[in-house]
Length: 251
Image 1 (spheres, rainbow, N blue to C red):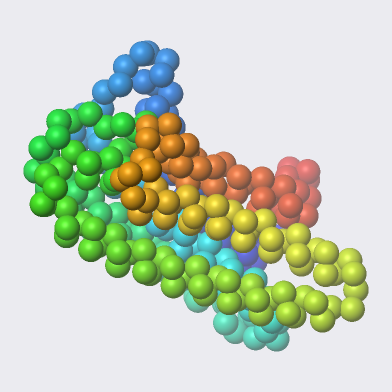
Image 2: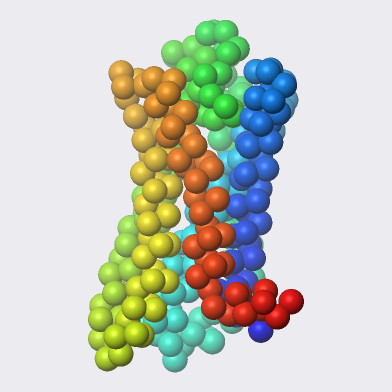
């Protein structure tokens, strides 16, 4: 019974959540338990690539899931046409492909820069701002331009999400049943909250001015955008899904 487009995208979202957590947390736990603070150069590059790959694909999937909710609530008669199995497969493939391309560009660029400020990262995993701090000041303009382009694309997706939710809320408010309105709002608001948390902390981590940077602040912001959303998504999308709870109870 879990073969609807929403469940199909939930499957892919769970894979990206698992990938995000497995990319950063196990190495941090290993370093904490064994009292080490080292990672190899190739290991750092691999960690950055896979983290960007999964986190980029996750945001693309969150955008697609917002479109799924928009079509289901605002255009229910066209749902089967707009979100057939072939269309869902194409959108999921596009999400993974965009994540791969974004990760490849943002991994190849920083690691091609000469490091002039040592090799100590002030973070529990390898991320672009910390790597740029170690590079020569004149050499990371290209990466900053790439970050601006990526930020513009992400901001465009966020505007699309907000616009879709405005249309969804307008349609929900026209539902005569109070129970129906409550169910629709309870499905949409947590998703919007997680997207807002993820984007605000990620923007702050990558675009904040150096004057307000500190080790404790950098650590807090990195945990908020790299660990919290993947950890909260299973609770938000699984435990609040009645069909999924029934299927688990049956198993």
